[in-house]
Length: 636
Image 1: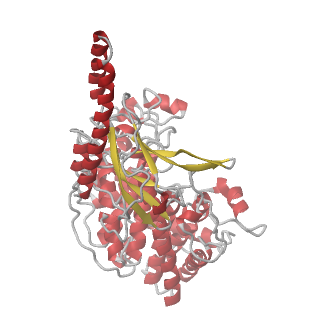
Image 2: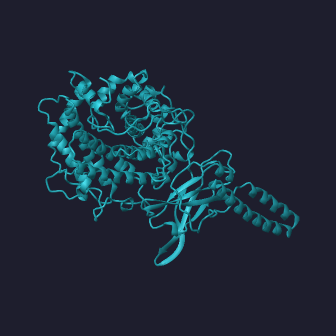
Image 3: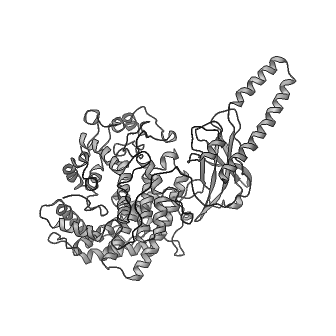
């Protein structure tokens, strides 16, 4: 009700201003000759068709160490979203003056009251949530201008500019979405990404001579032996402000090309290797230990479970006790990370930390199930994961606000958001915090604001029937995908087919157009495993356009069948696949691992199961063949 009232009030104020202006123009006309009079009224009639800038700053919200500005803005009669520009006092050479700070697009979902004030019968998106520069709190009285998209009217101030703003919860309206089935089930370790029953089942399959699981476990055992003899100093951690160093040392393992970069940021003894993907390694070690304890028989000469568990524990506690810390020993807050050029919060931590924290969660969950952690060690690790939960939550809220990315309406729904979401979900599950789990899945908790919960993300991450990218998401420089590949530009078709992943626009390289969607799909599978174990039904869920995880893996299976795994898509081998031109010249990479879990979860889908044997062969090689989170989630 308050939103609709503010919309109507601001529209009324601006309409009155327009009447005064028009009256002055009419007086000038009457004083002129008749032909001038006619010309003036014709000009007025034309201007009357150009809608004015209207809007309202509804309030200001605090989230951690930073603030958001919430409201709506539009050009009346236009469905297209407008930009809003923040102005503030800035000092240059000691001289203070008002100037523009940044602009973002008011392109979030808006409810009926806003649409009525905007005179927009097409139900466009007109709301905004702006992450303010640090130091701009309730006392800042921000000035916000709406930027016209059709000439003929001024770029007016948005109502509420220059005034003290009321505090309000950080939230965003959403359209009504289908219900997710199930209710929360309490945690028993292990119970985040896999259960004790799954571990026992995998171990039994490993012990069947000649089985696929035996083959993959052999690869895992060999990798564990390498981990234990790697020469890496696993006591080395990082606590600085550079997100990329966390990515290469903690979150992501295949990063040899960044060794010099990480060594420069860390204090490492000569002759000792720098840590790489510490969380990934810890989860692999913990998984091996848990499988051996579940009576999986490792190949001769393989390490014991206690040795693997001890190193996993050492890695986790090193980061829990010394990583991500300020000089005073406290965990870092969002303000302490390298930020955008306007002094606003970092919106990229979702992928930097999210892709790693799920592995440290997996490792802790498995180690607790083995009794390898005492009460104090669990307390320290829980505090660490809770701090990362907050970093992910706050950074993802900033990403949703559009900070730091072009065509923000598209950037909200990529693997950046998906990594943050599953990172939050996994940590909330590890902490057995039902309120946090529900906040990540559904939003709506003002004490734990999550602007892009799973239900909202899911509805945008996978395209359904009669679906496609938002207009602001398409930024094509080339006429087709092949030209884009030649010129290193992003490209995507204006239409989408059911099952396509929204993260398809970054395809300037052969490995991106399908590789990035598969990264997003992998995180959707990861989240689905957590959700299913926690009592929900993600695999049976259908979005507002009928989309599902099954639909997504079935869509990309067409290219795996036509071109083959890690082969190039062409018109000749994949022309029958829907929207195939989107992927000509691109590699079918990452589909194999997703097909294996797809076969297990959708065993009645023959389009998927027909590729099982080839997918098993492809998934047995490469850097991710010993990945711990989805290990064993295949058929033998």
